[in-house]
Image (cartoon, rainbow, N blue to C red; front, side, top):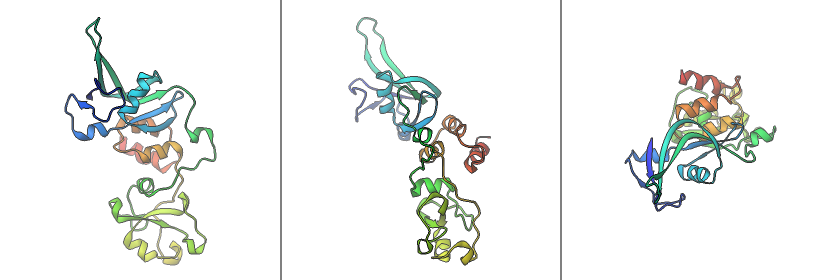
Length: 223
């Protein structure tokens, strides 16, 4: 749990003073925002969380206490305002979850979330690599009518990508170790997260389809 001084911050500052002197990465910990029905919406930083609290947009909270934000001192009571921010906050108002309002919603495809979907494994040799050594491989190449969609792309190491070249896995006599899939919105939120906390992970996985490969992977990790 982190303490942050908001005395001169007006709740949206760039020059917050850290009270408890936590590790620098502590302030980078993101809060999971949901709608009032509990559907995951997005990741927000502590400044945005503070704004939601002060504007009375937070309906309820879940998870662990992350930050204590300190405001001014009440001249009459002598008490200082303290705002507690939890790891998961549910907000009022219209839902912004396209996965809940649009049944045809498909998350945007990018390498960061693709590599996380595939657990930083090359889907051909099965070895794990840092993201800088992975590439986006198109199972059916563009030259053969393939498209840039979730179900036609996998993480691949450079060696396997070069070996496969502009061929299908069958043509290159290479076998995929897993079937690519399109993440749901809740899965996409998870894949976008940086340093997802255990309680946030537990909350998100409850919204994953039970048939999802991510569901089994995260459940195994949490157990």
